[in-house]
Image (cartoon, rainbow, N blue to C red; front, side, top):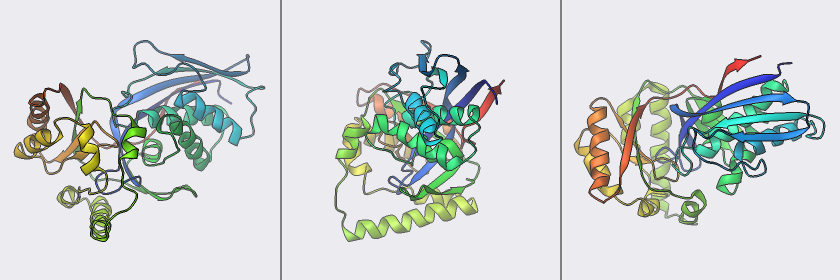
Length: 309
């Protein structure tokens, strides 16, 4: 049994167009870096690195430590008999819409599983979902699943933890992050409880196109199906400058434009002109008096061990 492990878990794009609470794409950056060690003193001992984004340092309220504790519970390992020291370098900005709480939760559950020799990925997924729920208000898999498994994921059954994994085609995404904080719990309250039939039918078609495009590597099909009439129409009201950023991105050559998770991050898929598109989105937000930044990323491979001893 190893005594120390360092793992990396990256950001994700949840919802991914029409797949509300269902679709997720792992990104290769940014990421959380978590180091965990077995120590003599029982319990969970958490340290949040100052050089990262600030997050709760109380183990009861941090996604990483809660996920680690849940993993121990599921594995019938008492926190009164085993001590885990955790150091979290938070690289995914909280409240960004890029699965920040999920990246910490996956890192915590994944690291604990490595140290305790737990190989069942479903157990890791369940523990990570509980950790993510500390921030979102309830466990969800649309960020956790792609962060853990990598690539593109489809949540088939939340309760039974059934997840479809698809290796996405090579693509580059431009992520723009305006200087706005959107609380996931607030954004979820905006989602309508009932949908009109035509919207439901449209989402089924678009979602089918996304899955087919991911399987066949048809980037233009994926982009053309990047539509959403459930969450985007209401959540964009929380993102000042959304319409200006969207029109600027499309004019610069973006094939699509949507919100990542609950926002405020927005993203595009494009074949070229990636920097020009990123600059156009930033300029669009600036016209709404919102500062923003952008980065270019690709699909990621999921949580991984970067050191073990």
